[in-house]
Length: 296
Image 1 (cartoon, rainbow, N blue to C red):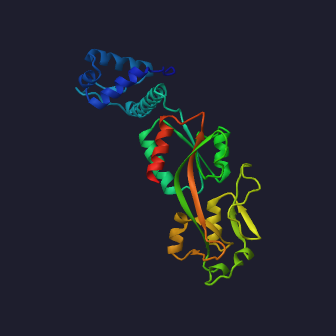
Image 2: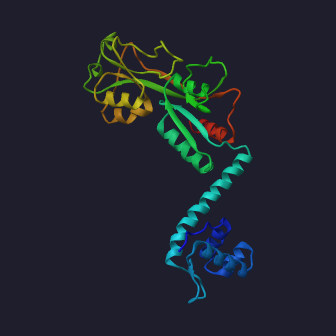
């Protein structure tokens, strides 16, 4: 037996129509063709593949052969791929982005990000997301460098030339530590925070090099990952400020304590949508911005 040939997409479409309709006549009605044309297409498919996909001799309704059931799985996968290809091309011809490259600050609440991206996937199933997670000035840096089309970050570089900033959400930052930490006690004196290791989120970019934000202690541990900072705080390694939504359950459960420090009462962190002035987002990116703002 020689190598099987390559069926046409039309032959596979006819094959799937027969399977779904259950009869040749039903497939003919579905595709708007004569029954004889459907039968001819199936004959050609079987000739190309070198196998029988239906057993039509013993019943009025074509039944899938064992080989036909295997072919069905692959035919459906190919048909799905073609449908996605057509949808992608249709979107591109209508101005839809080929993909959306998004960079978000670690401060962005996870639930807001997840809910927005789930809704995005439903609304734009043909547009993939390329997601980066950064901190501080690194968000703006990726947008400036063209690595990302859209950013969600803090207002550290409002003056940056060539970037547009749309404010949409403010976060409250609160100093916390594990219950056994010395600063977790009542009546902490002024200046005590300076004497204990502070965990500080640092910037992987050069945009804020040499600039400190909310640093009070003499000794600091610099971390580029908010999750690592959270884990170290829970372990009692130092103290530091965290976005309130991220530690709310820890405080309620007694795993962390909101610190009452005379010289460090926390603060705020306002999130902005960021994009290049000369490269505004397309329809999918615009939808993403509008949904983030509406959900904040």
